Image (cartoon, rainbow over all chains, first blue to last red; front, side, top):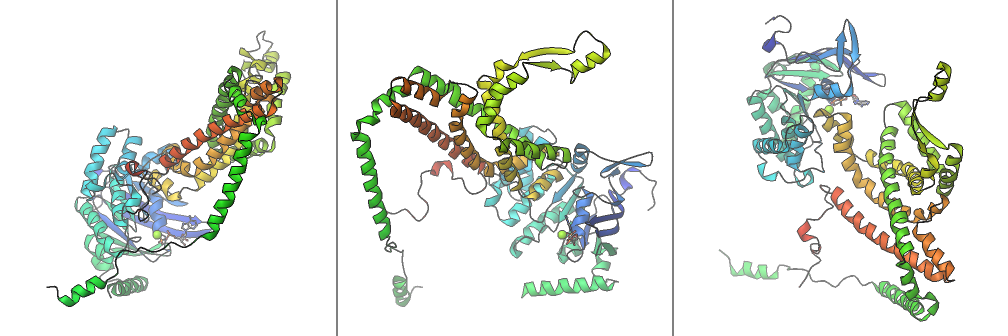
Length: 270
Length: 320
Ligand SMILES: Nc1ncnc2c1ncn2[C@@H]1O[C@H](COP(=O)(O)OP(=O)(O)O)[C@@H](O)[C@H]1O
Ligand SMILES: [Mg+2]
């Protein structure tokens, strides 16, 4: 699989090397390595507080990293390297790096003062300078894709959690991202609404979108992920195809975590 | 299949509620008391000839009064609130910026302009500035000193302004009231900005919006919901504070003009009634404006009612 650096399509879309991050002197990422190839779906598993959210936020520079490097599609995130010296990028340059990376939050974070369609069309208009007409048309198309064409005029407060999260996915897709980051997209949802969001994500994966998904939905990870990464306490404990990491985990911490998840799922089914 | 038994049961099932409301005897006592007071005030207003509402109404429509109302009170309020809101938001954004110099400037500004009484500020602007700086010269900073060192004949001035002509006019008054207002508006705007969920900013940034665009398109529009009500308060206070314009001195202003006429004809109360009536009218208009602003910025927050049902009764309160 070894290919010369920088040679087009085979180069990993995301390459994180030895990423470290501390909050107030406490290290929460302790040297994370990750590679994601184009079209791959990577699921990040791990107990609460293991640093999954932080790592996802580092990828699109919502957090700056203390050490290591993150490249997305060959671009060093957050910095410019010039003759061996790193220069922090300015606000606008970081903003332009984020344009190609969609993010879906646990708590949706839809803009409450905008309708569903306006939520989806806003960034293309404001950031890409696309005409209002074109952005609306594309927005309607995306809302249809997530099954919400009929709710385009609704404000977020009038939508269910599952509908809000699907609008949030459409909003991220409107920027035509080459990478989508999902941070526990179904954790804030009532159980009966989880399925509709996962279905949209499955469709997206099937359409070839590159995705990094933090999730506790083991079924989704097993069926959709190409690669599963288990994190604990700021390190990658174990990674590989779902059949290995979920089906036949090698590490005690992974096994303990999966056992806990399974008993929770059983409880939910009772 | 519906059996007789189940039909009977259906008839027994409780139907719509028509209950007596909770009795509120003290409300009726209060209403009676207020009615008596209103009657007393009304009778005094109507029977005491010294109120002289006819004269008050005439004073209200005198040309100098109308002029003062438009060019002093209304223009002064609009101008100073425009400066106050715009500058206030800038100062609020500076206050929460990551740049310590901007934060410091913002803090000192708010500290200074909140401490100084508006009347004193207007006297300083109206008389003091023109005394200290006769003309304002537009050119390089320290142009005169630099020209001196270099031995130039020119003092590097591009143009100059007559300071007294500005600070001694309504412009000076608008500037002074606006600068003072900005200090209060900054705190109002800051609390509005802080009321917006940080997740909103992150969502906007994750979409690739710059900080400035995030502030303008996402944060401020939501902050407005919190900013508008106290700003309505500030605007109404400012209408009345334009009576301080006399400190500049600007006499084309409502309160000065009504009392000038009243003093001339020795009818103090009708003069006061005339200005009070105008202030009431302006403030009523402002409250209507505030209602619509609040409705606009409340959209999506479940506070606004659909336009077509604006006068519909709340669900459940209706009846035959
Ligand atoms: N902004 C922050 N300030 C301080 N500590 C933080 C911050 N964000 C996360 N942390 C801490 O970092 C650790 C990892 O958090 P997080 O990345 O949210 O974990 P996960 O998403 O896996 O549950 C936690 O201990 C959390 O308390
Ligand atoms: Mg998390």
